[in-house]
Image (cartoon, rainbow, N blue to C red; front, side, top):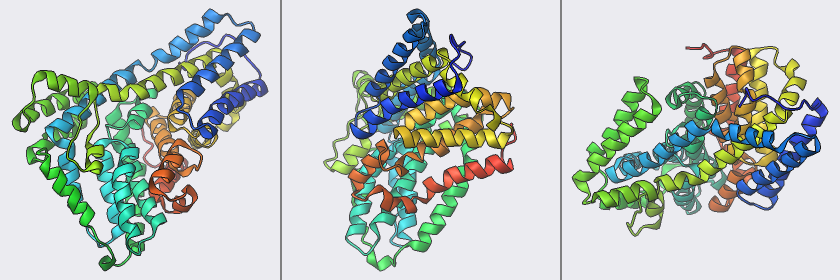
Length: 458
C-alpha cells in the first residue's frame, strides 16, 4: 500500500483536515455510540469517496485503491485462519488447559499482586486474549481482593498488566499477528524483538507489585484451587499435551515459516487429542471451524476454554479488510502522503522517526479509542519512513504493540477501557497508575529509540 500512487496531491492543511474528519467520524461512533469499528470505518470510506468525487477523482480509481489496500492484508488473513485452527487444536489436545493448570500452581498468598500479574500473564499468553483473561480470571481476582484488605485498583492494575502482556506476546493474539503482518515482519521475529522492551517491563512490574502486596494471611485463594480442580475434571490436563507448544517454540527458533510452524503445531495437537478424547473426524472438523465448547459446569472455566475456530477470527478478518481498504483510499487520495510530507522535517533521525510513529499510534488510541486502527493506520503510514531511514521494520511492529496494543486500556473512552471498567468494576483513571506493564512498555520503546539499544538490524 505504501507504494500506491496518489491520484491527487492535496495540501498539508487540506490533508490534515480530511484525516481529522475521517478519524472524527470513526471516533464519534466508537466512543460515544459504543459501536463496533466496522460501520464507522465504512462511514469514513463513504466520506472519503465523496471527497474524491468533489476533487474529480474517477470512482474506478478510488475503488482500485480500496482493493489494493485490502490485498495487502491477505497474508495476515491466512495467518488468522491458521490461528483459529491452532487454538482449537490446542484446546482439544489439552495444551492450553495444561498451561493454565500449571500456571495456577504459582498461586500463593505471598506477594499477592505480583502473583495476580504473573498468572494473568501466563493465561494471557496461553489463550492470546486480554479480554477473556480479564473477564474470567480478572473477576475472580477482584472477588478475592474485595473479600480482603487488598486494594481493588492495584489488583485491577495487576490483572490488566498481565492480560495485556499475554495479548502482546502470544502468537495466538490477533493484535500480535496484526502488528507483525501489517509491516511484513515474521511473527516470531516480532515476538523475539519485543523482548527488548517486554522483559524489562515485566521484571519491573513484578518487583513493584511484590513490594505493594499485602500480608499473606489476608488472602484466601480457594477460588484458584477450584479452577485447578475444574481443569482436571475436563480430562484435558496431561504432561504430553505440552508437546505442540514446545514444537512451536523449537520451529520458531529455527526460523521456520510462520504458517508452516502453526500448521505443524496444529496437526500435532490434533494427533494428541486422539489419546484422550473420543472424537470422530466430523466432530474435529466442526471444532476446527466453530471452536471448542467447554461444558465443565463452572462458568468461568467454560468461558476460558470455549474458544478457537476459524469462525472466531471473522470479526478481526473483516475489520482488517475494511481498515486496510480505508488506508488504501487514504493513500490513493494522497492524504497520508501530504501529511507525512508536511511533517518530514520531524524525521531527521532514527530516534525522531520512532518517536513520531509512537506518538501516532498513541494519538489514534486517544482520538479513536481503537487499538486495531491504531496498529493498522500507523503501520501503513510509517512503513516507508522506516525503510528510508534504514530502520528494520520489526522495530516499527514493536512500536505498534508498545504504543498501540498496551496503551488502549489506559484510555477511559477506548474499547478496552470501557470493557475493563465494566468487567472489573474499577474506573479507568483509578487503575491506570497501577498498570505498570502498560505504562512501562511505551516508555522503554522511547528509551530504546533514543539510545539505539537493541536497534541493530540482525
